[in-house]
Image (cartoon, rainbow, N blue to C red; front, side, top):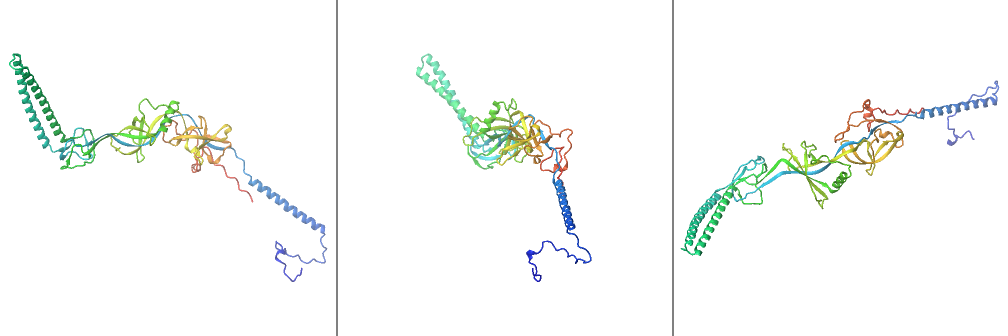
Amino acid sequence: MNPTHPRPEFLRPAFPALPRCAAPDPSRPAAAPAARRRGAWALATAFAAGALLLSGCSDKAAKPAPRGPVEVGVVTLQPERQSVTTELPGRTSAYLVAEIRPQVGGIVQKRLFTEGADVKAGQVLYQLDPAPFEAALASAEASLGRAQATAGSAESNARRNAELAKIEAVSRQVADDSQATAQQARSDVAVARAAVETARINLGYTRIKAPISGRTAISTVTPGALVTASQTTALTTVSQVDTLYVDVTQSSTEVLRWKNDLAQGRLQRAGEGQARIRLKLEDGSTYAQPGRLQFSGVTVNPTTGAITLRGVVPNPDGLLMPGMYVRAVLETGVNEQALLVPQQGVTRDTAGNASVLVVGAQDKVERRGIQVGAAVGNRWAATAGLAAGDRIVVDGLQRIKVGDTVKPVEVQIKPQGGSGSSGGAAAPGTPAASSAAAAAPASVPASASAPAPAPAASR
């Protein structure tokens, strides 16, 4: 290559050139070629040994240390006595309702009650002008007196003619006619007496009274208003609210399921008496006074496919009002062998199917599909797929998979709400969970600890 031209870029060495050696000293002999080759082989061998040593150290550092089975928290299912309830929407209504309407027409003279106040049965609510009815009563009484006088004269005449007919002083025809006249006069007296009673009743109707005890509503008329007998618009309404009805609806499908459960022995009746009802109010609170189921419909509404149920609830403090929306919790029976699964141990797939992880034989994890019913506090009532004695994984779900061998640790989940009979204290001798475990997405068993991270690979 021409030394006057620079070397092309692609022909330049990839590593920087080593410094050139000084020119050989002619006075010294040149090194033997064999010695130079031995030095090169020794250097290559040293480099290869170092590379193998580094590779071995890296493999040992990257290999994780073996560990034992993962500890998981499990709950062993045991049969419990569980009250089975159903929650139904409904509304309250007054136990008794009376719409106050006048039975005679007239001018309202007085309103004798306070709107919204409690009244007693028989208490006067309105006073109509009684003058026309007092006059009608007086006229009826006068007519009665006249009829009584006429009847007395007719009876006397009939007795005389009867005596005269015995001695043939008058004909039999005259005697019979006088008897008929006396009978007619007595009937006129009865008619007049009924007219007096009617006039007295109408006069009494001018004092409009409450037919039941209860609470009054707003008055639709004021003094001076003209009212008519049996008018369409009520003057006011009196409602008995110390006891209320609760009307709810339940689908016929649920009723059939309940009857089948009773017939097949899966449920027992809650008691010999009527079923109890608890109310949940619009603000989410639970009404303190329990009620009872009074009536169950015998026909299904063809439009809605539902049956109407009616309960009776005491309302001594007046907290409930007619027309309120409530949710009635109705006790439908008792399951003596209920299996309640903690909700934190139940997972669902994209289709909504429920499943749990069960620790089976040889402590191996298996997934089992289940069917659940109503929620009982923080637990699900399992209806299919599980049996008493099954160990359900509730803690450490994220650290295991199906087929893993685990170390089950029995824990207890404190029930919240519902009426299950299982207790809620921690298992005796179980240490408290660490703060790190409490901060994990799923609670860790009391005796379980998070696995140590693998050591980083050495470079």
